Image (tube, rainbow over all chains, first blue to last red; front, side, top):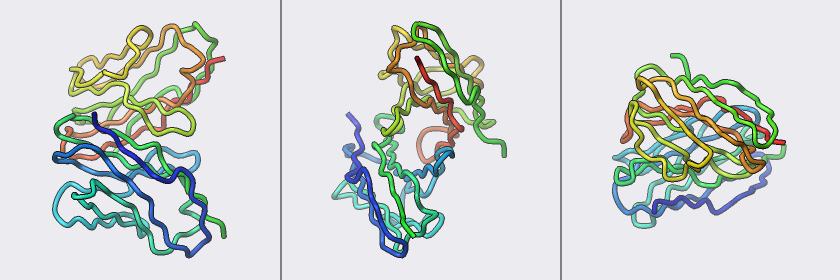
Length: 113
Length: 114
């Protein structure tokens, strides 16, 4: 069955530190990959997405993610975090084979000034 | 562009009562999802519609949960009877059509069962 794993459940960083959140998925076929963000009290918003082409994708607010097909991974990165990046981050995978959008458990990021 | 609308935003009910949630997707979006998000967990897919047909409902507890999407637009999700463990945020999302499209989420309905 299709599944998504996020390795870090809670991450605490100081402002200006670099961020990398891990995401691995289980499906071996064609996939669409997403990172969603949920700021406190707000709804899920799309941060970035990968459908095809350049495996390094850039999203909003300075975030980027790299799709590594051989590792079934889609890790999220940001070189320098800000206090306003405090939120919960969800990796999600849509596979054509299963035809459904599945989410990981999420990573709660706290950035201290 | 109007987003995904959900109502109510909050609901408190006693166990064994029934409750219904409503979702109006973005106009023209063929795919509609209902997710359950328990505190501290990721969204769990309950049911997925393509127009008014069910694509996947493998994780929907069918003894108490039901959902419909009449005319391929609005959708309702019902719980009857509710249990304490149903306390969660119920999220509705829509997308144009499965592959190579992104899902847009509503604000969610926070259900508390006491």
